[in-house]
Length: 171
Image 1 (cartoon, rainbow, N blue to C red):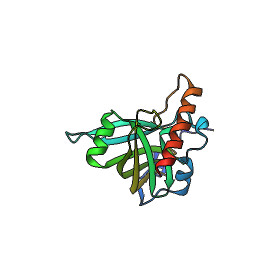
Image 2: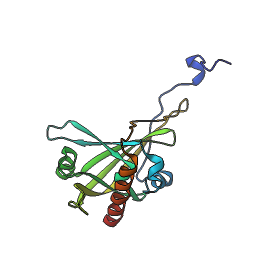
Image 3: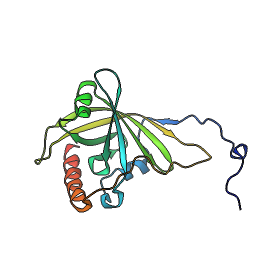
């Protein structure tokens, strides 16, 4: 059987992203800080805006972000990074990740809530969800975005567990 059907059979048309003002329950569960060792290799793109008005990209792991509820996320980034400086200056950040066969874009208002904690050189932020866009099409599933391979999985997951504890304390 040929899986390559002509393009017109897929009814490919533009589909406007769905929008919401909160995270879906499934996404909250995905970002709840559990099962970190099962999610090694999955990255979340963070976009802030630099002083010249250009998008600035960075990556978070699942061990650096925590969904507190459908309207709030806590996350940590390197304290000396351009991302930290950009978020402190603008109070805005956008996350992009693949979940449930779609690309999710989450716009957040964020503020720094703590300096370095427990000897970690991380800036901790709490953020309120302003808008969520889900980019999904009826003819395909998004399977992956940015992925990576850790050099020392055991030590990184241990660090993530500590970071998630600190993110819970920020709530």
